[in-house]
Length: 185
Image (cartoon, rainbow, N blue to C red):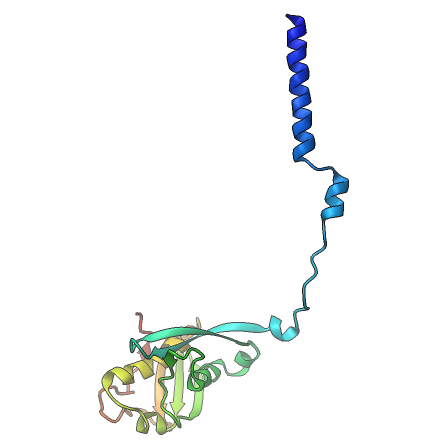
């Protein structure tokens, strides 16, 4: 009986040794197989400064506001982030299924933050060159409002046309005498 117990213990030790040898490679093999990671190219300072901004454009198929992320140099947002974001909206989207809602010829006169409200002063082309219609006008307004309110410090947007308050689009459906808050979809 003692011989059987010793034989069983010996077999268990041999099996354990084989399993350990098989599943745990020795340190020499591990060191020889390890390679240091070499990046294909160094990351430039410009790449390190990049950030993604969220812009709102019109989807041509659904006529709804949609978001498009754009990778930009964060230095552009240091001096006048609100103006920069509106300029990106005017530039238009990269996606061919989207389009800018801001009328052609619109110029930015001035953009400034007062409290939690951004005052956006645009040229008269903003209302004169607009295609019209209440839905299209809403898309234009909320394209700007939703883009600007992506920034944490912005809650409202006030529109001015050539420095004047109380203007409206040509059909007088949407007036600029009130503050505009984010439109949730």
